[in-house]
Length: 433
Image (cartoon, rainbow, N blue to C red; front, side, top):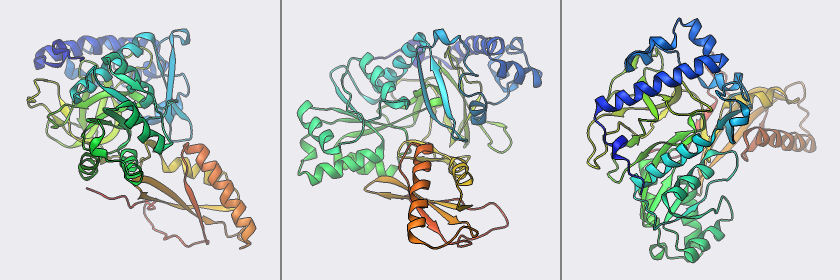
């Protein structure tokens, strides 16, 4: 159990004192070590010494996802490369990955944060945790692995795929904690039922789910069919991965690890800071990361903050389940997908026009993305073999850009609806709550 009441149960005044001390340190650090922030702060007329109260964070400019692409790969690192012991990444808006770094201390801090949120969910050192996240540049696999290991749980590093084998491992190893995306958990239970496995006889008790939204209906379905408790956690690669916030057993919002991340809610249109209980875009500042600190990062996630006491005893601010995005990013099987990534591929491919639509559906509880794109009028011949080759080429390019498999459907020229306003690029047909 990683239970730290000296941080998780502080009064608001004491928490803000810690936050201010750490904010002043990180602001001074990025100003002196990261050229992007030096220039940005100077352009906005703010210096590190201007941060005298916690409310002064509002004097600092926002950081957006485009900044990561523009400074690819190491431009936002605040320490020399020799101090970096690990990098992780996720996809970016232009096809470039968002590369983030970790020092030895960052890795230790990350593990501790994961151990905290796992403890909130009810995981102990007597549990056996099966991790069904990929063990690559994606932060989920290694993040949960190190944190649960620190907690003292036994780790089954199953990674992804080979679902029947995953079910067999649950039976053989006595898995009590499942770590995966919620959609994969639903697919797994369907496979288990097809295998004739009585899921009520498995030892599963807790699901630690992340990387994609989990609707209330999806949660209830997972809990019913797996006979276990489902908990949410929140994080993103830009902020070090999972560990920003986690849900306690009370299930009344996710506790933000406030001694490490300062949360704000803003009006996504105006940037105005909103109060507790108001819905808006979540903005986070990392207070303790050495290698890759983020100042007022606009997550684009829509939620609200709750400052009312929680019956679990923790006093940290909680965030409600994310209800949407302030931009057009899609999350497909745990991977961030931007229409602009696909558009870049289409514009570079001869034979297709820049008129497309993304159709998102769900099959066997797994997300499915179909890219529908018009053929170019100048190159449209209608020959089946040529169309088949073009479709195969396009699918390969898009799969490589997104790092997930998609389907491609070629359409006749001018078959997609035209509008005088913003084109409707996304048709999301996944079931809603």
